[in-house]
Image (cartoon, rainbow, N blue to C red; front, side, top):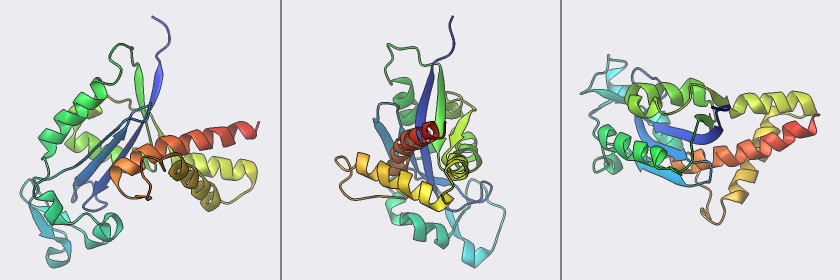
Length: 206
């Protein structure tokens, strides 16, 4: 058997907050190498308001809702009341990943995203362990790539990141006429396009 084929997949979660212990994922986005997209809200949670209760120990019947996270993604709890729960989302997301070009041996499905290893992957492993096992432990953090390019080209990290996101938005304009940052599906697909842009900038350094 030859070397494993490497496929890059975009991944993004929107969550009820930033803590992997106190908060939960409320939207999942996965972008396949060809740009096909899976996205779903995730419901079935029982909530406690963080401002009311402080920081109680959460459990299956009590997960915290951080208004600061809501201000970023704009997904309200009413939308989640009719959303599929984690088991349903896990099954459909797994079907999407395993059903992608089944005639081709996939090898390693490497994840790409902004802070994907430190933020998204822990939520993935905790709440979607079956799906996590189908994806590589290796991932590409686009923020780290931006820092490397910033140093190589002598321009600011902020500018590199902004340019990569502008490029991604342009590439997705036919599918998404309006930019939808902080939507998990949009961000997952944008990660793949940003990675393409950043890869070309890396080549320019040599």
